[in-house]
Length: 204
Length: 204
Image (cartoon, one colour):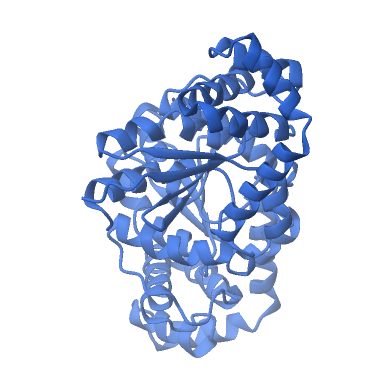
């Protein structure tokens, strides 16, 4: 059985990405796999694919709102449609990479905290004071918070996120969530049953 | 338990529509429901939603080809990617409505025959001689075949399909397959688990 980590690409404003974030680690762990989380920016991906944000697509936008909530109920995950949707998430994603470089467990907790703050409380998780508050809640001390705040204003972290998104595009990432297992890509939280079968059987 | 028929909208060139066509009747029957099949034209729907055919979308087109075949394997349904994809399907859809008006069981057999001819043999199911051949194979006699051929050239059948597609758009149909159960819409064959739960529990 293959034990390579699986890759999980997502945008923090993606409802289906949030739902995947609540399931993917446990599912992978049952099959002896770890998961590499990789936040991206759907705005950049959509420029490449020519897609519009779902909420803005005629007919499909209305459908999607209903499907987000129903898919959450189906999976048993708390969900409240945020009043502002979609939102920019570059600060959230940049903070995630910065935290991840020194403490990947804290970055994982931060990702969960950010997704839940947006999709259950409707908080603007791209707002820098909110980003810092979330980091504090998941264990960052005063020194780390100060360094994170400075880092968010630096060109390095902007370049870092840009490189990560470009690398994702180069791998074919065309939406959120996008999961890659041993080179096989799965788009959407609705691919969970296929992912489960793939992990159990190492392909099908 | 509600026993109203469920509605199943699809385009004959839609791989996910084909996969749904192989499962929806049996699934509905287990819950005491019948299914109203309704062929539509995705080209008209895409004009309303601004979408492009999946195969032509950068990145997502490549992903989709892989996902069509994998989703078929996942569901245990024979599938061979047609060399010409997508194709126009107005003649197939018109023939379906014409057959349905006099013999709905024959229309159901015709739909299965057309989907399978396209997605397992790569036949051009919009070609009129092929449409007539498929109708013959599912039981249409010489007289019916002659009438069907004449009907396909008539303005009435064109109007009929146009009205059906407009009616589907008015109901919010924004892709294929699109299933409506007691007013609740489900887009995509990947919604089968949700459809199954909805039918079993009359909602969730």
